[in-house]
Image (cartoon, rainbow, N blue to C red; front, side):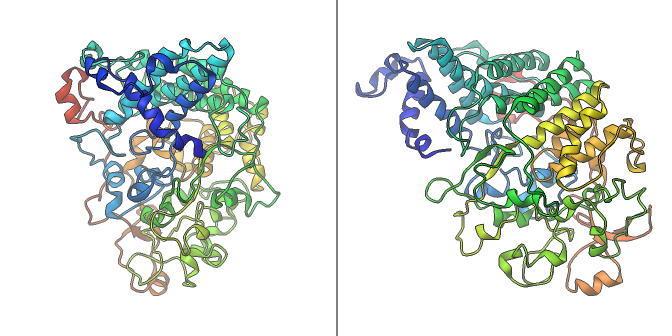
Length: 595
């Protein structure tokens, strides 16, 4: 966010603290402090207060909705670059990624406290965020400004609240809905959680208020700026798609309504918004090029992003990205061949006897996501060290991978070379237009209403960027997904989502809402480990297993480790546990099933 957001931090904190409690001891504050009774007068007062929400949400560990890259030591966990480690896209095996490994293996434990990316009940920080929003909503009417002006900030606050509550619900199910300022005597502090469907009805009201009242443009140039109506529409489509598919596959009332809301919100953004797919006409570079630069101002696809700037806010995410381990074989095999067919059906597939063969005749996004050995110089990989890549864990020097598939999608050597710890400035692309296309196609397909025209305005726009054949209404069924219980068309829409949004924090949530947790029981494999690989990667320290389907040997990342033989409990693992300290303070919260 812009510098003025940080400059008002102390001022806003004073307002928040004054408004945050009704006890008599507040009378001890000096008379020259900001007063809640006299503050709420002008539109600028409301705008300045709402700036505080952007500041609070920079705590990506405890409020991961505008998720970017947390600063300092937590850059390795609280970043969207790493969330695929919860699922089957990444195979981290560094100790700093233990929270991801625990969840991925089905060995998550009930936490004691409610902080940290692996707990996400958010403790006092997250609920303080809700409290701050509710304080604003109660006080905005005091300002003597036109209703239309006031409603912009009401919509902004309600967008934050609805988005936050959706995140609580998707992780924990039922949630304590609060929409007023509480004090230490409030009965809600010791109440049971509100049922999921009641909370989500309130969330939808918040999101509708946001899409109704937020302006199309705050006049800030999006470099970066405030959340506008178009951002609210994308967030609404995401939330409604999650809820609609959750209810369809897990059970719940009226999933069709939620899916239709998702499709309508995405369609409004697609048809009327000012955004488009970024392309220069170069299918070999356009997919990842804007993910690897420091300034995405003016990019037509980037809707919301966070700027990092030395002296204001920095991160260490590029160096920590090596801890992600590497992409999995399962993920890499999901890329289509350039004829638009999966590797199980295409005559163009060359196999995986060497890593070079893996890239032959494949969707250009694969080579823009995973490092091809010939591209190490182009990307100045690992500070332009000049070594041969890939490098497998155990090999001396350079940056190594647990799987052999180094992730290159977000790699930016310019943000590493010559920079000290936590002085990096890689931006965070928080919302991008491509998601709207994917949300729309999936919602329409889940409703059973999708047409070729819908595919052409959504999935096929993404394929056009990389020169891939169009998806039609009757694709062949990939044998890998024949037992998933969905149509071949929905298989391809889900595949497109996995490929396009890799490394952006979606895969784990997608598997949970589709009720496909059993996919997480498949061990994470890497490149094929044959005689040529043993010679090429001399010194590597790895374990291997034979794939019973093809008889070939592959790196088995977690074999003989604590994370070997991953499991997924269908009766437990779709929701996360409530921390023990919170249950001790309020037993009425209740624990989620199986924990």
